[in-house]
Length: 256
Image 1 (cartoon, rainbow, N blue to C red):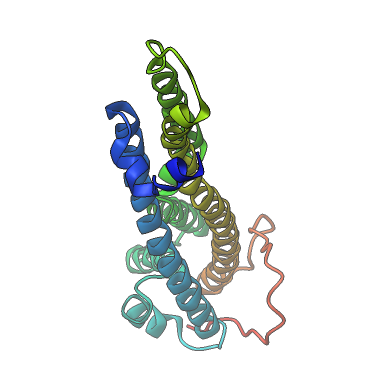
Image 2 (tube, rainbow, N blue to C red):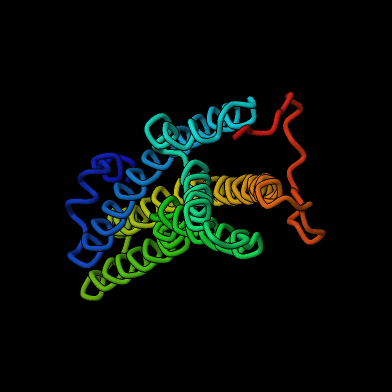
């Protein structure tokens, strides 16, 4: 029996499997390959985003000119969604600044437009960054069941082949059962990395959302104070309060 089982390597088991089990294995293999492509792509992208966003925040809170930062940020940190949020908000400021002639500019309209523009940009960036995570979740949740289906089907075929046999031994069914169990193993191999990666990247995406939201609130406060100075009145009581606690670094407000 040991010789019979040992003579069947993994590739032999796969090649001798039935067409349905082979189709299951092929689908699991393709799902695993695509999952790993997404995992590696997200790993590189999240690292780049973290690096560029941190560099941008340090520059923003260094007390330099916001106008100069607006002109160079897109080229210096093209992969940072926080930069995209900043550019969207400051773009609305520039429009407000250019149209506030001949009448007392309305600060409330400015804040509403800035908030709306930054929110839309934030959501668009998060949707773009999160592409592929749904596929990882789907692979992680369905691959074990797909592999189990292949196993059940293979075992059914193995026992069906014994229908006409006068005597039955374990040696006769062991290769067929082994072929079927390979499908379950492949399902787990596809599912486990996908589940781990999805949980990690989903947590990273939530943390990124919080950081961008905090930055947007702080930037909105800065714009409100600057607009109030332009029109010669104090900031309103209803201004957005920042929820960011800082990172323990010395931070100076951006200058105009």
